[in-house]
Each structure stands twice: as structure tokens, then as C-alpha cells.
Image 1: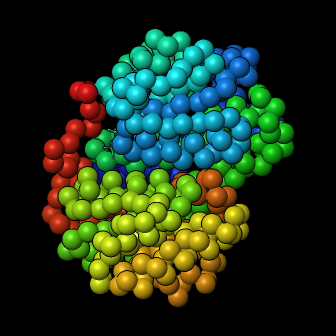
Image 2: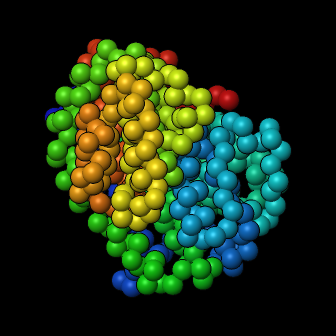
Length: 369
Ligand code: M6R
């Protein structure tokens, strides 16, 4: 049932290109327009939205963080992302024109469900992004967009994360389209890039031997830090979460620019720092800032593991280990940059003799608050 893979997690990582393709399937018209028929909100409802809140936990929360960048950039309305377990205690300001997006692989996470119920009580519209048909969260939502990732068995979320990203991109583009913020040819251009990601991901997956080797080498590290900027920041958080969850190692993700405000003190001689570098095309300024942050940690002895785009040759001189990923537009880059981090965590965990699919203290769906 593991299809020849040693762990479900590895099987699910390998299924990611197909999971993305399946999540895109049937959602795009011939003219590149986005059709979300499972979304029972009228175009008028979507035009009335003046604020978006995203609520989720764990990995799904990281997908929400990426979505915030995409939605604000494309739709030009404020979008907040919040841990579901914190949301209602803050007494958030919600009304009929608020769209709350609840992201959950299982559809049964109690924290997310309670956040959703709170939003509904305040008359907000609730849209679920979910991977499990007929589960509680979609049943209680006004609308649902299913990710077609197929069953995820390993406790660590992998393909669900990438398909959640795809669902968020589709919702962002759809909102931009119905609100007339993006022209259909602009939407079509992004969609074309999205449709190219499964092939790029297959290429990336075919050359992960170096990452596996690095994983075995890092098994004795006492801490691993992850840094990223913009959408690379949630990717850094996700890389750290995977490592904690699977390898039981101390790991922490930071916004690259925030490190110098305190946490850089953690860096010692040989501390592994995984750096997620933005594409040099797109917004080159951001890439250059991350490169300076890499130099800062390196000057303090860090062993740098750099995830950068193919062709970014200049970055090589700052990398003790360079892992390259195929080019994607900046906002879509997490579909690539996350994958080596998933493999790294899996490999380190396996090298430490841990149960990769069933890490200690964890359950696949968390049905208590
Ligand atoms: O089923 P959900 O997406 O609601 O689950 C949310 C989190 O519990 C989940 O993503 C968790 O963080 C993963 N095990 C991380 O790999």
C-alpha cells in the first residue's frame, strides 16, 4: 500500500505533482477563467467582501500565511491570517462582508471548527478549503473548495499543504477576477504558470539525492534554523515544523530580516541555517536582502543550506550546500521551495531511527481544543 516507498510520507511527497494537477483539474475554463462551482457564494457576495480572515492550524496555517501575500497582492483587500486556536478569544471584528477562509486537511480539527463557528455567529461568510469530503468543517461552511490531494496517511502534512496553496491561489485569482481587479489575460498568465508547476516539481523530485545525503549528515545537529522572507517566511516555518514533528529536534523558522533583532545570537560555529532565497527575477531586491542575511549568519559561523532558483549562480559563494529549484513566479515559489525541506525532515527523522509516519505524541487529526 506504500507503493514501493519506505514510508507513506515519501509516497505522499512523490504524489505532489499529481495532487496539484488534480486540484487544478476542472477548475479552469478553456479561456483560462477560473470556475469554482463548489463555491456556493455568488459573484455579488464576493464583490461585497471587504476583508478576508484565514484561520487554520499547523501546516494549514502556513498555507494561509502564503495565501495572505497572494490575496492582498492580487485582490487588493486586507487579508489577515490567524491561528484558529487564538481567533475567537481575540474577539475579532467580523460582519456580513467578511470572508473567513478555514483551511483544514482533515476537516475535523476542533480549533479550526470552533473558529469557523465563531465567525458564523458573527454573520461572516465561511469558505472551507478541505481535503476530506463530507467532513465537519466543509459541512458547516457556506462554501467549500476541495483539494484533490487524495488520502494523506502520514501524520506530517505534505501533499495537503501544496494542494492547499493551489486552492488559495485559485480563490485569490477568482476574487480578483470577479471584482475586476485583474484582467482575464493577467489571470490566464498566472494560471499558465500554475499549470506548469507539476512538471517542474517532477524535475525537482528527480534530483533529491543530495538532500537525502545532507539529511543523514545533519542527524546529530542540536538545532536547525530556517530563514525566509515574504512567502519564503512561511516556508521556513513549515520546514522547521516538519523537523520538530518528525526528527524531535529543536528547529525554528524566522523572517530573515528579523534575525538580527535578537535571534542571531543562537548562531554558533557550525549551526545549520536553511535559507530560502527568493527568485532573482520577480522582485530582485528581496533576493538581495536575503543574500545579505545569509552573509550575516555565515559571518557568525553558520553552515548555510541554501534553497535558491536555478541559474542564481551568485548565491553559490554563500552556500555550504546549494539546493536549486526550478523557476516559478515569486508568489508560487512555495510549491517548489517547500519540497526539499519535507525530504530533509523525513531523511533526518529516518536517520535518527524515528517512526516517520507516526511521530510520537501526535495524531493525524486533532479533535480537542
Ligand atoms: O487537518 P488539519 O489540516 O486541520 O490539521 C492541522 C494541523 O494539525 C496539521 O497541519 C499539523 O500541523 C501537521 N501534522 C503538520 O505536519
